[in-house]
Image (cartoon, rainbow, N blue to C red; front, side, top):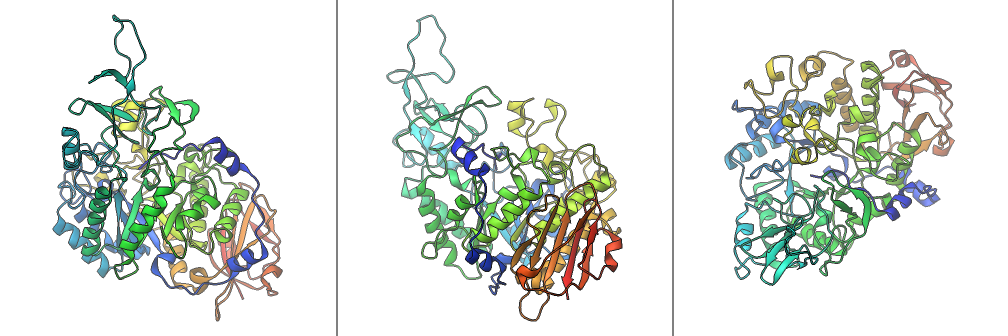
Length: 614
């Protein structure tokens, strides 16, 4: 839904602070294999942006029937669940994240019958469906908002955040009104505070029919709902039950941290920066992460948990550190989210002081730190690691540089996939990551579709680059659509980066992902084993051991994150292992396939190596 939030100064300082060493008890807990078979604890969740996955009717836009047609591919890949970005009726200002009806399907994606067919067919392919639920706001074309905006006395008058504003600064009679200055019932007024929209400009918009401002954390076409009104919560929970009754396995909750705002509407501290439109940025401390969100999630969790079949909640969460992430799981007595998204590993640039998805680095201490923290600081909750989504440049581009060769970039992509699928976490991936799709950012403003890029150009170019259509084959439009015109252009590299070509290449990134997911699902150690970090001071190679459940063998994962060969000397005594005999399971360096000893392993540049300790 959103670009990653710039952190407050306090959060930035906390983020850059040296990580505390885990206690012996935490280390022991992390090293202990699990026995919980709950499906989502081990799941591979695959995000699909419906517009961009597969077009079945030739209009250039992906749809539900297109997704259904590709379920055999997803089953073969090893996907456990699909997260569908919004496919509800919408004016498409924010491409579905501005919802005008929570209990229907947008006609451009299909019908409810098409959705039911997708759900049923997915179940036959052993794939669950998770829906994106946008609770923070609706479209300004939603009947709720249309009614609310019509007067101050209608039944839904307080379903949104409305305010009279405050008197405008005095000005000379011949001076024109200032920005967002309006003539109200008692004279000229301006917004009640300095709150800024995450999508640029003031967070307040004037409506003549009410002679009031309404609040919007995102676009002005996305007014925020007022959850201090119990009727709003009831209406949203009814929508949740509608889809649970149809059989969905849960929800990914968009922008869930922004559900409540300071009721006193105090000014927020400013970051000292201007957004792309030139408006002063507020730090969102009074419009995000308020305590009321947690009690709301506890109530929502009770609704979802009342259904059979291990239904669950994923949260779009961006936190400054692992300790803050832990709070979003709730407690044993009051659970909240099953899987809050851990973006610290995949989207944070170490040392930058902010969460900066555009400048992530392949940094061993960074990976070691956040994997360790996820294993030791979450009170044994399951982390959900993620490296790609629809709001940020693709990991292929973020973790590589323009000077690296294609082969080097592919090897780095294999490292990212190895971390995602061999750590003790649930895994969230994004369509096309498995084949190495790249970011295709528009080079001209007239080509931009994302409103962020339209209004913020050239400083902000929008999110179109990470949303281009799935690249299926080498034929016209890469097999995405029979139409010569697609909603976004097909990536220019589709002739070499596509499913068909990579399926026939045993060394491709796609085949690597298939092998990893297969190992993850079928090897008891990768499925259930604990984790012990190895060689903790090595700045170039990340190594960790997955401890073995009874009857299985430990597994070593070691990754050379540099462009130079590295020789490693691993001590397994912390895991009480004396054997030095290994059996290679998967590597992108063929010479390592004959390695049988743990002693003095030399890893070529950007090598991934997975081996069983015998």
